[in-house]
Amino acid sequence: MKRIFKKNQIIIATLAVMIAIAGYLNYSGKLFGQSEKGTEEANADLANQELLDISQEDIETGTEDIESNDSEVEGTPGEAVLTSGTAETTVAQAKVTREQVRAQNKETLQAIIDNTNLTDVEKQNAVDQMVQMTQIAEQEAAIETLMASKGFSEAVVSLDADSADIVVKADELTDANRAQIEDIVSRKTDIAPENVVITPIHE
Image (cartoon, rainbow, N blue to C red):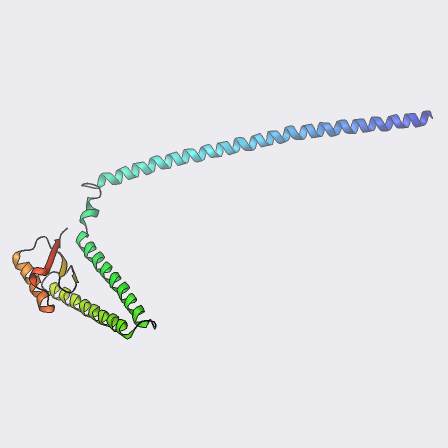
C-alpha cells in the first residue's frame, strides 16, 4: 500500500513539473513573440519613414523642376494654346459637325426609303431629299475648292435652299474679298449675294 502511495506521489510530482515547464515555455513563447512582433513593427515604421523621406525629397525636387521649366516659358500661361491653330481648329470642327449631321440625315432618309410600311409617295419624298442633300454637298465642296484657289485655304461652307454661311480664316476681309467669295457662291448656286453670310476668323 505504501508503495502504491509513493508511486502516485511520484506521478503527481512528475505531472506538476511537466505542467510547470509547459507553462514556463508558453509564457516565454509569448514574450519572445511580442518581442519579435515589436521588432517587425519597428522595422516597418523605419521603412515607412524612409519612404516618406524619399517621397518628400521627390516632391521637393519635382517642384523645383516645374518651377525651373515655368521660368523658361515667356508670356502668359495658356496664351500659346489659345492663339496657336485656333482658326484651323474651328474650321476643322465645323466640317466634322457638318458631315456628322449630314450622315445622320442620310441614315434617317435611308430608313424611310427601306420602310415597307410607308407609301411610295413618302419614299419618293425621302429619295428627293437625299438627292438634294448630295447636290448641296457637291456644291459646298466646289465652293471650298474655288475659295482655296483664291487664297482662302481654310474655309467651311454650309448651304441650304436659299442661303449660305461661310467661315473663312482671314485676318480681315476687304470688300473686294467679300465680293469675290459671293461671286463664287453665286456661280455655283442660285443663292443671291445678299443671302451669303461670311464670317472671318483669325489667330
